[in-house]
Length: 251
Image (cartoon, rainbow, N blue to C red; front, top):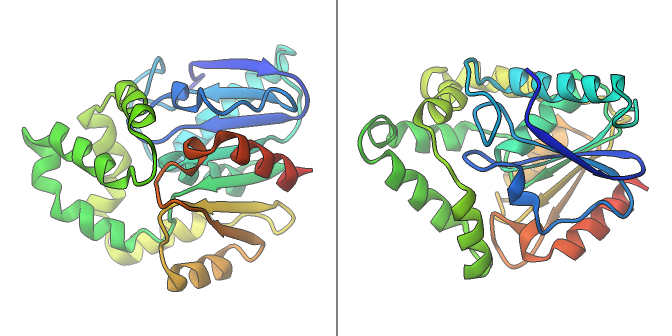
């Protein structure tokens, strides 16, 4: 699928992937155009992109790759492996991109990859997800994770948010339907990033020392940083610091 997208800036290729229920506008405060050719996409089922099954993570990563390939073929962007930066669900998609396609570097913003605990939470909420309380669940989930993000910026992101039940359920199908063993096997496949591809994790909500050790085992080249204040949106709390850090990481 060719995704809705925009292209700006010049220089090496960098791709921005948003979180679940959001779209590429969520990146508006984060300006990489001084040093990169920036492609922002609306993932399948989000923003102006087509809502169409399937919504599994490898398919979402393949959509990004197909979109970049077409842009490169038309000489809109450099024909080179991208730096892929993903927030929340986009962090999983970015990670999968690094496992499936050539990449210069991968940046995962506040998305734990050890999904067992998330599976328990999602299964407990299955009734709300499938029922009339679906919008309330989504609203409450993101309100709990705002942390140190100021109210004005959180209101901006909430204004972008457009929850679609079939899209969310499609993306969370492994959490709802897979056994713990099947989910672990899925994650293992999505984290097989070549050792020569740098992998940066910027965490706003600390997942704990056990997770850090697990992540280092799964992706040995991981650089893992915990930023303050605690929030699901460290890139929006301090966009300038975020841009500076990514520039330094891929230099």
